[in-house]
Image 1 (tube, helix red, strand yellow):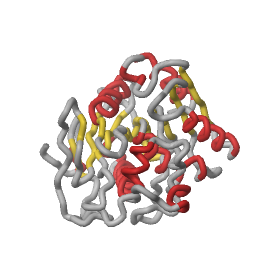
Image 2 (cartoon, rainbow, N blue to C red):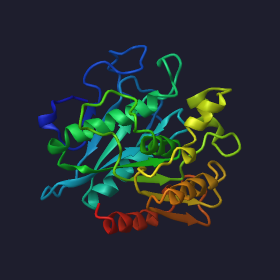
Image 3 (cartoon, helix red, strand yellow):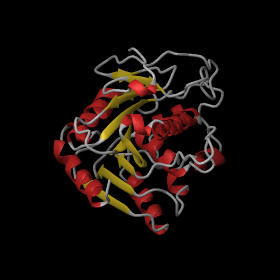
Image 4 (spheres, one colour):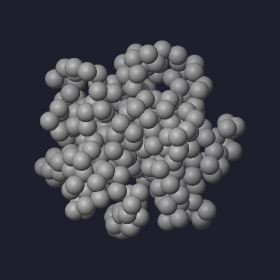
Length: 288
């Protein structure tokens, strides 16, 4: 896809988020953006990028939402959890940006545990830096993650100080709110999704590394407000991931709302299109 300078940004354009070398990469000059295969999944990303989806309503600055699809840190369910939801957000007047992040790999990254977080932070920095061209308010940019993408989104929401990338003075990579949909939250063996943990942290991560990326342990008073949704019968990512995160947020007095459906299993958004309506209510009630 043709890449244009920021002053020509438009809907459904793809842009590279690193303007110079890619951090923490064994191939820092790589320009290989991920290709969608197998019903819209992306199996490899060399150069992280954003696909831009803008609302047709251009009457005012919009809230921007960074979408992070899941896939167990092994693929990116780009169309199903990214593009489809970006289009729904557009209909409600939100500008949405779907992230193609590097999947953790020792062959492409110096430290694979940090690569996805660095890409998510770089995406937030890109959105704030180019907010005017993108028609968004730089103080109203949230993140929305699904499954392992929910882990990355919650990592972005809890690991912003200090940032893992170089950030200009006066800029922040903290999202203004977080929306987590059947998220992986913990890397603790008894709670996590095993495939996501292995892909991100390796076969036998240290206790320190496990706790660092167990985001229920990383909540602070400055963690952004959260909306969580999960199904009680999820057999892939245990609903206790969301419950533990809810409890941690509540303990730190971070505003949080949670919707747990009795049935739906993992990926219930593909079978229950009405799931997103309470989210729109929450966004509107909070002025986003």
